[in-house]
Length: 128
Length: 342
Image 1 (spheres, one colour):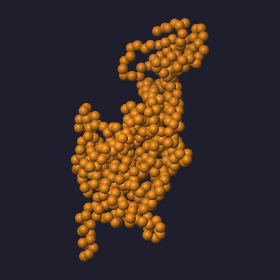
Image 2 (cartoon, each protein chain N blue to C red):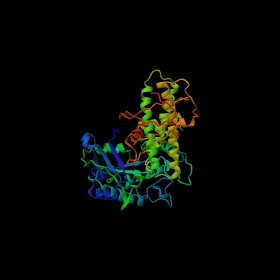
Image 3 (cartoon, each protein chain N blue to C red):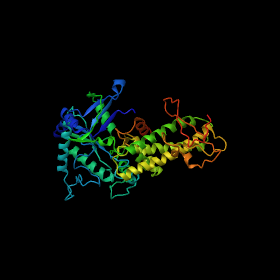
Image 4 (cartoon, rainbow over the protein chains, first blue to last red):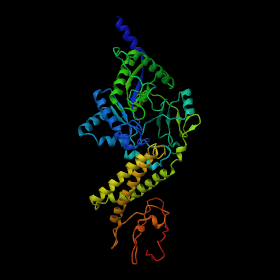
């Protein structure tokens, strides 16, 4: 009897859903060049390694299907894509298909909103 | 572009304060509403702390924050209960910022170049989600999500949002700290981006007709596509919010500049090849070469590299890639001994 009452109380409570969205903001150049950010060079300037990020993210997503990730910068994603095996590409496609990996914004870079001319923004999004 | 929603941080500090106060952190943006009316609507969602994880909850190896340790046998790192209480407070504040109490919440976990070790991030997030759901079963249900998951969830609630039709500029990150210098800083680089953009636009107007021509040989098609691809690559990274903005380090700015310069040189070669195909070569002719500057002298053009002797001929071709019709072009001759044939 006790357990039934407890279950009813829980059903009435309706907790608020908190959507936890893991991401990484990977500047396509800032303190370091785009290539330095990608391959992890010049740790003395900034400690980064986008290649390592994407490698470990895909494996961590595969380990637990509840995990999700949202990827933004297609320049880095393409650079990474060119470094991985066909097997890893297939693994990544599966993660997109099952909704664990979502491509958001999807521009070649995350373009500035004030300085570019509109044609360049459109090209940046189209190429991405 | 077909976007349904836009998530962003970096809202003007005063406006952010107002919006938190009025519980207006989400609205429907109607871009170009004067011409598009109510046809287009994009849901805007402002994140309360730019694009950061809740303070103290960065689990990446690049952060110094504690782990979310839920194993009590971990003698000196186990502190899950206190961490859960901090997070509960954080989510309660977040909930207060939205119109509908008890509605779904959206919280990013990340920052610049995080996820260097995704394993450590996800291990801690797994623990955090499990622990929070166990400790606050009636209050919170945490789950992994993408922006689409959140948008789908709130769209199903049949809510209404305020409408906004104007922009969000300028941006003041804190009182009197306006991000406006970058509108004009590093003018040379901004100009180079425009030159690159014009170059690509002009080349595209030739390429598009060529690429549809069944007589085009594969080699030239490959040359054109490679040049165009490199231009889109280098122009694309130059549109980045720390590139064309002029906010990158000098060495990085030089890198963008060199990359685009090389891409333009490659694209000019492809344009010259395209010209050869399109209008052919007059006899005794070396090659079509592109004069990269307008309003310059002949010294800016490839012609200045040739030793022109008596009897030399220079063939000039002008391409107007604009949709605006130009009926005259003024061409200065290298010296008065030239005769002009039309």
